[in-house]
Length: 224
Image (cartoon, rainbow, N blue to C red):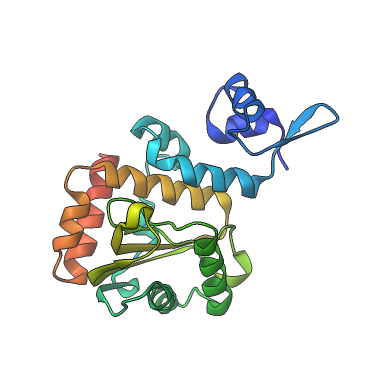
């Protein structure tokens, strides 16, 4: 649990703004003996639902990585597939976990698969641009040696629970050992998707090597 000041620091926002958000029911929290208390897992879920409205400046503050590579530090060509051999939501999740296992950092693939399936059941991670970012609701340190990202692009877009029936063909699986890395990765990916042409370039990539190069170049441009 976190108090008001801790959440304000966590969100990189003024404590008065956080108090207003909580009082109006926009931020999940509860008062105990007259003081606000917030569950970290609920705050993280709230952040995830808000990232699409964050500015680049807000996302940069959330990253908190001192300008170091983050996505490419956790992603490798061994954990990528172009195309991803899947045509349903269930098969996409299964294949992404299979890719993550190629790092030898996945100790309990079944626990990860269950966690990302449960998170998708809470609300799809699909975005309106055809990208989805499946991830567990909370970090899974016991299931991982190190944090890992997997990437896949299906041969054609599929229903993945996106708003207004939007189809999805680009997938980033994010599995982290701690909250800070988890939020940093989500923020970095969101910043990369703000870059003009990034998603279109990924959609046009004809190989894993080309897709990795596009991702590495996009992240490098953010850090330059």
